[in-house]
Length: 560
Image: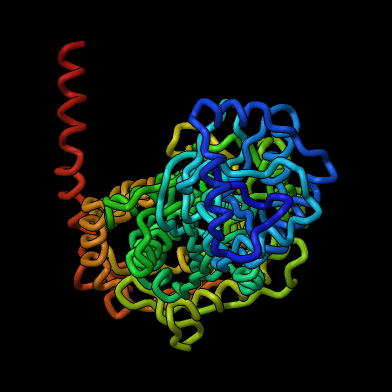
């Protein structure tokens, strides 16, 4: 038996001849080992606290070896595992698997205060015999120097993964996942944060928070330009709106984030990806369909579908227990998702559709009642269905949208309160702020009224419904969406020009539109006589156009 942290530690890390003789005499049969385990004396609370203190000093205990440390039974055993889980983050403050090599002599010398207490590993080869009521088990294999490698060395409670890339925001849903992944899958966790324009405040301090939670690395990528250019603007060109109101802010962001996660997973050699989406929402589908499309070999971990946390209140308690800071309180809980396109609000009083949103909930837009009393005019320049300028100034996609968010926000533009049908079957209520997006949609649609004919507009609108449905459902990389997008690109080739809008206390009003490809002809549309349109021709047209109605009426009259 290897008896470590005993009352009389050996003088060096290498066992003497006398020590080896003593070890040989202490070898037990498996039956005696089990008997010894079942008859272990439980240490008292004071000793337990000292154990925690010593483990902290040496960074000995991390989440993975909690399941390999002690063999004890009874009610105290249950308390030990519960409290160690709660204090896990404090035991490894650098947030990564501990790599310091500790000799048996060092460990034994530090345990002088724990003399006579039961703290032993029952194996001569580093293995462990599992007792019936085992709570924590661990063994240092010999008197040789031992590398304490933390959670990544062992199998987790639910299996073993090597490295997981986690979609990380630093909010409630993802903050509690880092320690959970290490405990349950014995893996390294690489946190990934995509900058899609959610704001500098949400990115500030993320690295410290991620590593304090146990992550080995935080990767941040600036995806703002890609997000606007390759995801937002195609949806804008398509006129994609879900269920008459929703401008797809979150739906468009998930595939660009998931795509970047796949790239990071390949770069760091991860064998799995994870997200903090709940089992009731749409985002789980959006993330995972992108993973499937881009790298079907990656394993996907969705903690909200596996753990015992049943809601946000439980998650808050779990986070507090593990000393994970989260930007929410029990008194006011809003689930928010922000990016350069929009900011969404869900939860708390919004879960009752009868409740009016609180005035202080909104963050991007002022209350229309408090907006300036003087309207502001803004001109949007568009080329082939894609916005390129604001008030004559050409801007990059992300810069253009940022500018319009500022303009629209101060006039209270783009507030939407709706009950939508989620992909998973239930209805949900959400409030969205989309100031710049609302301005752009008004401009793009108005310009199309000049450049597209009736049949094309009707077919485009019909296709836009399906396009929006595909994006909402997370099927961005579906061939059908890509095919519809090719149609939208083709049909928008002549949608070039500019639109001027008046912004006033939450409203957007079109005041001017022009295009070199305009199908509007003043000389034709004028009530004055012209050379192109002869009003007398209308009689023949009406006769032909109304012929089916006349025939139907004649048949009915004859049969009556």
